Image 1 (cartoon, rainbow, N blue to C red):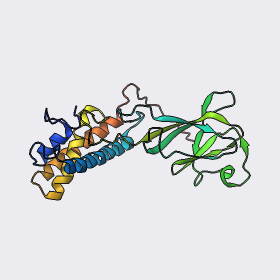
Image 2: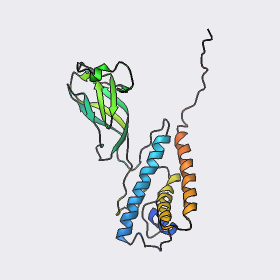
Image 3: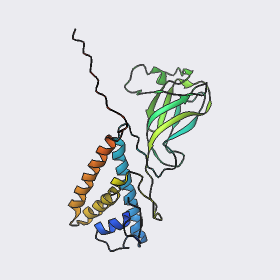
Image 4: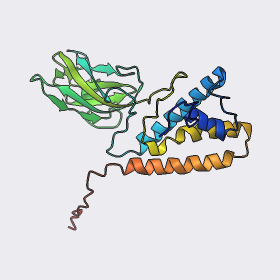
Length: 245
């Protein structure tokens, strides 16, 4: 389990990068410019890691454990308003993808609305015909970081929309010390290998190919783990009925 910057124990992410890249102890942690540069590189590595986790994960929903809240949020449902935008969550983290939408009915109970694609699905006239049918929403379309509801809400409701989403990981600050990457500890080394490889490639260091191989090997293991992580669910093979007539 790696912490961000530990000059005393010499085993933080920064210190491991110092060793991999041929620096002396303190050449990054004790240099404000280099520390800022490598902090940016480590955050870029975190984005790369989470992109791989999100695209590889199955039913397990990945989220950075450094976030103080869970990856869903509420917003008010407004009578007559079809579109709602979600660029950031309540903590300022960028929303990457919306994967479930729930609407509060007039009885105060949330129900899930169905995702559709206005561009390819059939019977989408309610979204663009201009008739603006109002009622209780049953479908939604995602466009960018916005959702469009159909029907248009005929009522207002405080916290009437509940949105489940993926978001950007925690961004390390130069002043961080004991903060850890918010992923399983087995893969913390990626926060060392990715920035180290980028530096070694740019400087043509002798260990650049070794760093690349180590990075790709650990990436592969992480993606397999993310894909298979829902071990609490049993896979069931069911026969497929084929009508031979």
